[in-house]
Length: 402
Ligand code: C5P
Image (cartoon, rainbow, N blue to C red; front, side):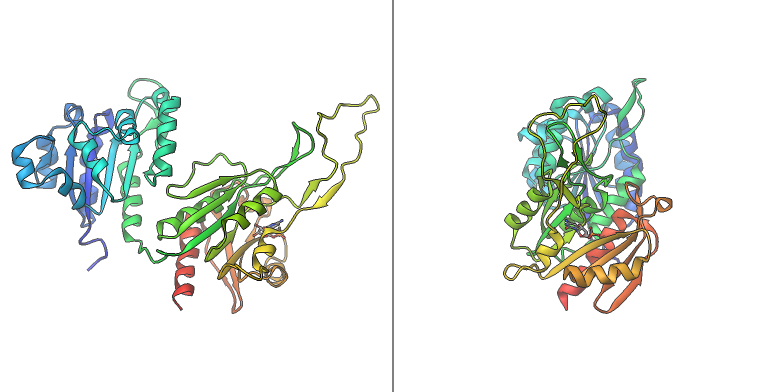
C-alpha cells in the first residue's frame, strides 16, 4: 500500500477561465489513488458544471453553504476536517482576498476559514490583477501564514494580454501536492536556521560590493526543512525569490547583520549555511556618495575580512546546533578543498559544488554536489536545487534519528 492511498484532497474550484482545468486536476489526483472531493463556487459553476465534475469524482459536488441536505450529509466544518490538504485551483484574486481577510460568505471561503489543514493555492487571473499591490499584499500575508502558492505561470492569457497570471499546468500542481503528501513530518519539534543569498557590503550610500548568488539553494533548503515539519528561520541577503511558505524570513544586507540575525535566532537544532557571504567589507565606507575625480583615480578601498558565519556557528561553545552544514563552492580540486574546509570551519557536513562557469550552478537551477562528512564523500547526480534540498533533508532526518 502506498503512503498516498488513504489521503484525501478537498479541491476548491473558483471562478476563473482556468476552472475547466479542474477536470484534468481531478482526473490526475484520482489516477494517483487519492480521494478527491470538490467544492465549487457559484462563479466557478459558470465555467465548469457540477455535473461534469461529479462524473469524474463519483461524488457529490458541494456548492452551497446553507444547504440542509449538504449540512446533514457533510457539514462545512466536516468538509475541511475530512481532508489532508485543501487545494484551491484555480484561485481567483477574489478568493485570495477573502482568505487573507477571513471573509466567509460562501461555502468555499467558509471551508478555508474553518480549516487547520495545509492549504495550496494555484492563482489564475489577469496579469494586472496579479501584479496589483492588493493581490501581492494578500499573497505575501498568505505565504507568511503557511499557505503554499503554486505559480502562476507567465504566458499568453485568455484576455489577450501576456504576463504572469496563467494557472500552472495540472500535472505540475498535482506533482507538488503529491510530493507534499508523501513527506513525513519527521522534523516536527526541531528548529532549523538557514542562511542564503549574497551579502551586500556598502562602499557609499549608493554603491556596494556583492556577488551573483541567486539564493535559490538556501530558499529550497528552508522550504524543504519546513515541509518536513522543522520550525525554520531563513536569514537571507537580497534575492528576487518569493518567501518560502511557513518559514520565518529575516532579510539583511551585510555579513555583520547576517551573523547577528543568526545568533539571535539560536537555539536551533540544525543550521545550514548556504549564503554566499561577501568575504570582505569596506572599512572606510563613505557616508556621502564618493565623487568622480578629474584624475580618473579613486582613493583606495580599505577592505576587512567579514566574520565567518559558518565557522562561528560551528565553533560556538554553548548553543551550537547539533548539525551544522556548509557549502563549498569551488572551481578546482573540489573534494580536497571541501574536505579541508570542513575541518577548518568545524562544521559537520559540507556540500561541495563545482561552480566553474561551464556548470551554470551560480544563479542556475541545477546543482552537482558531493556530500562530505566525517565518513568520506559521496557524489550526487546533477539535480534541481529543490531536489538537492530534499535529499539533504532526508539525510538530516536519518542522522537525527540515529
Ligand atoms: O570559505 P568559503 O566562503 O568558501 O566557505 C563557504 C561556506 O562558508 C558556505 O557554507 C558559506 O555560507 C559559509 N560562509 C559563511 N560566512 C562567511 C564565508 C562563508 O558563513 N563569511
